[in-house]
Length: 373
Image 1 (cartoon, rainbow, N blue to C red):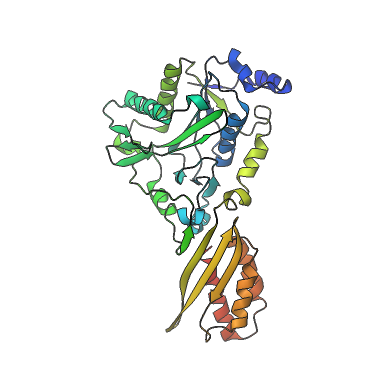
Image 2 (image 1 turned 120 degrees about the vertical axis):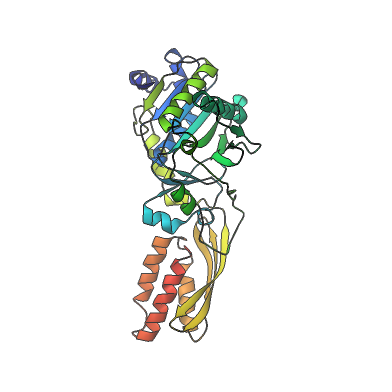
């Protein structure tokens, strides 16, 4: 059962007095079950940060239920160019987010449930949380074959991944979050989680590809709404708390002071792309033009999302060396970014000599360069 957040005045009083949210002990004994009214990935990730940073979780575990519009979410130490198809995501309007926890890349949409379990550091136990989810699934469908793995994933029928796990452990607080595939668009999932980029060398944490399946494909009673209610009920029984889920608005500054700033930070280029571990790109592209074919070689070093070094090499008959050198040096210091590269290349095109043949080659080369970003 869902109830609106009628305790808002209690929150406001606590904030005005600068008392930790643990003061809610009179309103919620033993813990809370929260459900977001937002489908915005940055707002929901900001709620995780806010709870982790501001709430005293001693004796008061929290379950946070949330869903998002189509989004690819990478782990804190991952490389988005390695993990997903950024060009396809731009075409389809699919967001990209970097969370503050580790782990692999996942696809979110409204057919995917996100569960975040908050506890103190000493009470942190991912396997217990996954067992709780399994009990909730079996409460709806007793014959469902779901098991937790040593990697702390959930497998359906011993082979299909329906849940991935990640976590953040702070000085005193911790959270474990996981996904649950109910009715996700599996075609979109498989297409955007396939990187088209070649020649990337990086120490970033790679994702491990897995076969996936929606729970709804197994049984049409396993909808997101039914499962969220069952998980909330199981969480409440396990922790002996009220089973009502409280609806929260992640954009409400009176409820979560400072949360807007957290959400804004999570959607900056500097966080999403700039936090990518240092990497290099060493690849070749074919300059196919009519019946002739030449190979262009590109080497780029990227640190903090910006190009530190760049070398673009093409056959001498294709373009004069001074033009290639100008193109290479122009990239240094700029973001390794499709939109910024497009603006830079368009500006360089305007300086190209008024020679149709040369301009045509220069234009083709620029278009090829943009495909690696």
